[in-house]
Structure formats: C-alpha cells, structure tokens
Image (cartoon, rainbow, N blue to C red; front, side, top):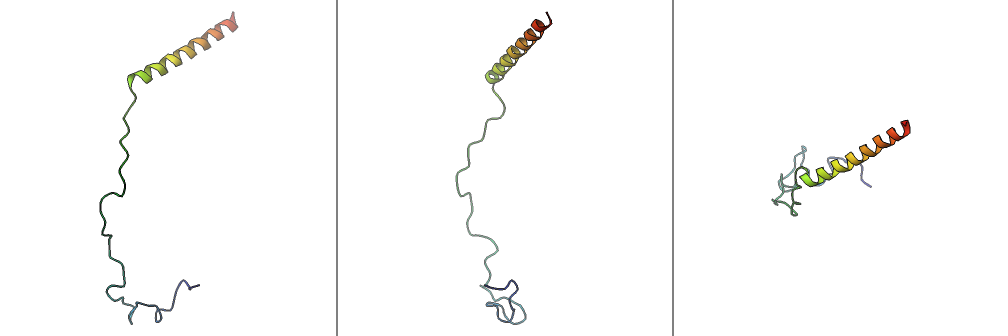
Length: 75
C-alpha cells in the first residue's frame, strides 16, 4: 500500500527541484474526436390533436358521471 503523500525525493519521474521531464505526463487532451455512439432520434415536440381529444372526452365523461352521482344523492 502506498502512502497518499510519497517522499518527493523517491517519486519516479520527478526531477530534483520538483520538475517533471517531458514525456512523463499525459497529453493535455485526447486524440479522439466525434461521438462514440449514434445519437438517439429526437423526440417529437407536443401532443397530436387525437390524443388530446381522447383525453378531453374521457375527462368529460368522468365529470358527467360524478355530477350525475351528486345529483342522484341529493334527490
């Protein structure tokens, strides 16, 4: 097991005075570019008219049923 703060005099790749010789550090950025896998297709924006109409019909039927039940309980 290594210690988290090794002795700089015995650390490989470190020159006297704390410098690092060329080639000891990785390059600043990778040599690859672009994407690694295809992007998923964009999702459609918004709802179509048919699903919205069906949802509104279902909501209207439920509301009519609840109002009918409330009226039946009052009578």
